[in-house]
Image: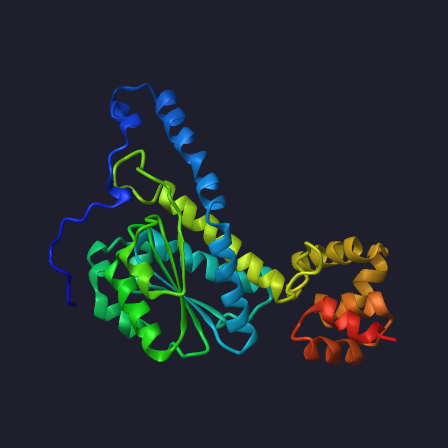
Length: 304
């Protein structure tokens, strides 16, 4: 593995926080108050970059709607958060597991056992991005804004013509010059200098949750604020899906359970049937034509 030479670069995430200099002298509850007070600042920092995040969401929608994929690249905390976000999308929204893919520096082993050196592997980032195409969106996640592994992946994305987004905690990241969108969240100095699993990590989780959720909503994987993309594959989920159907339609549990059974556990098909009176094959065809969007299928079936 090729590693980057040692360099001293001053970035916001490594600065000392003057408000926590005496944290090791405080009683437990005051330590927690300091941490909590710093944590409160994170949502405000994310709010300041929502215009940039909206552009990233639009790029994600464009990629997925056009048959491409969204790729996350990160190391350490950033990579773990990206992996968790990608893993939770199929069960939450019913999206195929290969549509949003997370790449973590060092591979699966590094997810549970920290391997700090792998973040310096520029060539590894390029190699992990070998399957990226021009139809895809590449999102590089790095708290410092300079992780070589992420830089390698972003370079590969540029070479193949893929759109790219950088999510960092350094608004002045040098990597920002070579991406389409930079979501640079100004989280400032950490409670413990350089411990980016804290505020910077919290910011990245908020950004990822907001990004992926907004993309799924825009693509029609929800109906209102309901998770209608989930397929009921066991008794627990069937009960949950029946509840969702009753909330969406106002109909009884018995009627909704029967519709879900006829739809073979597919909540979207059942919902379209219940709201339009269509038979299962007709509802399924409408959803297929609408790329899974319930509202689009409803418009198609109720069009005069």
